[in-house]
Length: 428
Image 1 (cartoon, rainbow, N blue to C red):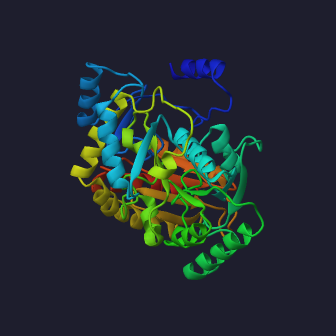
Image 2: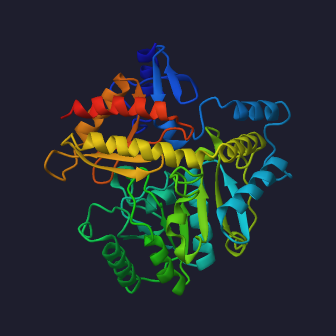
């Protein structure tokens, strides 16, 4: 049955639509932190549909909210007042930390970043964007144009002039050998120098932790230091929180808060986990920026009643059950467990991350050279052991990405770590 479905998939879908595993699997249902495939195999899910199943599979509170809303009305567009949309916007605006915040809902993180770029360029009357090397911001034409990761940027054509800044990757590149303070100072000097050679940019867009790039991050405070340089020149700061938002990093509710010394960003974008699988994205911006457009706009599917009902139920569950605290506690244990394993596996270059956003970088032993074949082998071995994980990375896809639902238990963390240990030891 799976081979038949794979053949049909290849016959009607694009060749560039990536599939995991040498023998791709069809996931048919899930519960809690587990999913099952069409063959009846059960897996512990450490990737959550690319960080999207944030709380749990088949969470009863979300399922109930979606079912009840579907029984009333599913959709009406933004041309009509929408109570669930207003209620979720109120909560997100309050949680964002951005003063006088306005919220616009989209259907994805790609569309959210696209909207943020529209707002920034319109507000600043500039099409120049600063972005980070090794970044990923989505697959729309404008988002691809600012993505600093060659593996996810299929064209150099763009409506934007993009300039790439140092700092998103701590342990690679020309500043890797510096101390944290020296690293930040060097990156700020690079940014300042760059701004002396270009027309005034509209904004810097940055992921506090780079997701597709392999869960890499700068030292805390880098973007606060950038913010001081940018603010002097009126340049906006957009925090791409599509993967880091909602407490996944444990220490903070938003990734930008690790860089909050100079205040909140002018805009933040969100998506993925807030819908727990339902299609929700959005932008939060200061009112002056959000309201700068001089023409009408709507969203047909952004903020539709059924997705907003899911988002409200999911956010309520996350806050009431302190899943941010759980991510900090269980994630901390999992990171330490994986670092202990990595110390005995020469092919592991680094275990990094915070909370339940963890990266394991694989390299050829004794070198810094990426080893994508070994990373793929670990992915396959983990799947064979009943564990689903992701992968990513910059110059080459050599980082394993671990991001379970944030309700992960200590026992499940230990179970997953044991599978990962066997998988990593299998590559030596």
